[in-house]
Amino acid sequence: MDTTDRRRSAFTNVRSLRIALQRLERGRDSWALRWQALLAFIDLSILAFFILGPYLRAGPSYLIIDYTIAAWIGVELLARAVAAPSIRIFLKRPMTWIDAVILATLLFPGLLFNFAFLRAMRIWAIGRSPLLREGLRRLGGAHLQDVVRACLNFLVFLFMITGFVYTTFFYGQEGGEGFVDALYFTVATVTTTGFGDITLPGTLGKLTSVVTMIVGISLFVRLAQAVVRPHKVNFPCPQCGLQRHDVDAVHCKACGHLLNIPDEGN
Image 1 (tube, one colour):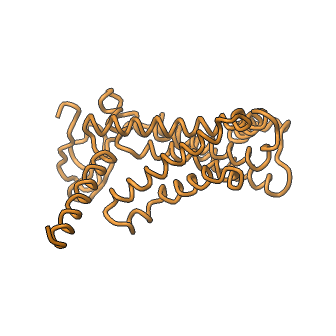
Image 2: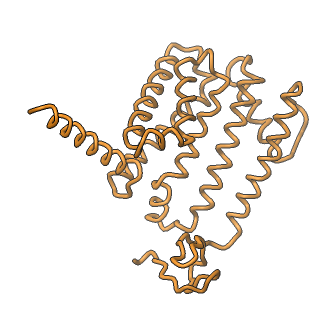
Image 3: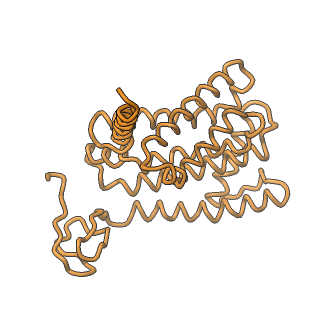
């Protein structure tokens, strides 16, 4: 086999691997959904590890679990880089940089622990994967997709702020008391209850409280809207491109074009 044949064979192998990884990442068949469910479980486990960190960090198993998760995220980043159409597109994805920061916090937990709150962003990725959409459809809950996504966005924000408050203001406390205080403060601030028994000191604390209230209320209102408003289906109009329509829509309300929205029976 000459050099040209070797290059051609290597290119074919890389292309086959890329197609297989793309199928696992974005596919909707049973095998792809099982793989995505496994990834979602691992993401939730990473979040659980962060939450339980105050209880585990004094034990000998903490660094073992930490570096195991780091190895997994490194492999996952490499797989996504191979599956991407190009490195440029891969680098433009926000989750690429978020995972890179998460990987750094796992490799250097003592130095970069203040950025560990970004691990909650991996829950946000679950809401953007085909797993959520296809799973809800198979369970007959496709109409709940917007509600579930709004809940996930709210939970991501809640855990991110809790993590930031904990690592910035309460990390020095023993055991899990600091994390509980951070969670208590975040929930009280987001809900505008404001008991005042726990406050954040200094200018940074005040700014954190302001951002938490503004963004938290906005996400809470978004969640309430998703719960109470009528369900819409996502189906691009061939004529004008309008994405959202009533479930029983026959014509596009923007341009009047005849629609053929598939239902669960199609």
